[in-house]
Length: 489
Image: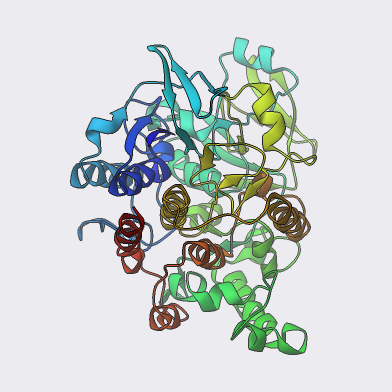
């Protein structure tokens, strides 16, 4: 088949690699001048690192070099992806600096894909453009005045050099990973650094008590099993017996250790709720230097707060907060999330892609139930995003190759609506329109591969209960799938 892939991040590159293994002709469109997706040089901010250890944050066919830091810097991740392109000879398929402006289903089947260079027809379209498409920067009262006084507002992805904040009063909005990462780097050069957090999130130390790497606690099937899934099976039933007594005790112990180690009470940044709340949305690692910055005064946190408006004071731009505080600010770094947009789809396609709640109607987070000749790769944000993206590519290749079939439309709708309802309730609506899998990454990988009918051994899964899953364990799956599809031909 002639297949177009939109996006050259982990999902797009692994889709290209897997689909060409099956004999398809693939073209990958990427609007940035380099591969990498969120790791592209056009989107990296100072201090960007992975939340995963480098052993777990890879695709199956290539490891990080030994010299790369345990939590890989953004430039090393992008370099890794360039090496992936070289290893699997993907460069001839790439159309970099080529933005897809329109993609629509053709009357006779397939999709017409349009760029500035023209339109081309494909038998199948894979959307791998990612769930983090456009930074969502709030509109604040007084923004025109703020900018007229020389102020600047930008998301972390548009901040590329420390000199842009050197010697300035900086507000960082948000308490997620990008906000805390940015605050640490900003505090090294800024006149003042103030973090304005509407809601505090629980942070996980990289090493518990400075000794045990968090990957052995959270990036394992045991860590995942501490939180109740839709269907509790196997050893997870033991963890959640007697009203989840064992799981609750283990999570409670982590909460106590984390609170003490990061000095959350002393710093006035103890989140409301319990540590188990991390299962409702996402897990954010404590950025090295963030809590140390609070302790030495280089970083101030205004919790349970937000910007009300910008105003002028003594001829300089200031921000008035909900608390009534008026804070000087020359630069605002808005780590306020992303808008999930697919700007190249016409409205009639979007109308069939989402449910009444605005959530993606994707079976297995891959297959749009109401549209033909279209699949999504990487719309399954997880602890192991590269592996999750690659597994979705394997599912797509399996489906296109006739190795497996989907259930009936009614069955897919029933299953997908039930999953979305559970996700909305579990996360209190913070489920990224049905794409956020955390912390149930391995559950999703298991379910996707169960459709394909090829998986790692039970012994490998047993090891994953105590050790972080290695993407390299999954390296032979696409090879076996190619063998099976060839045998059917």
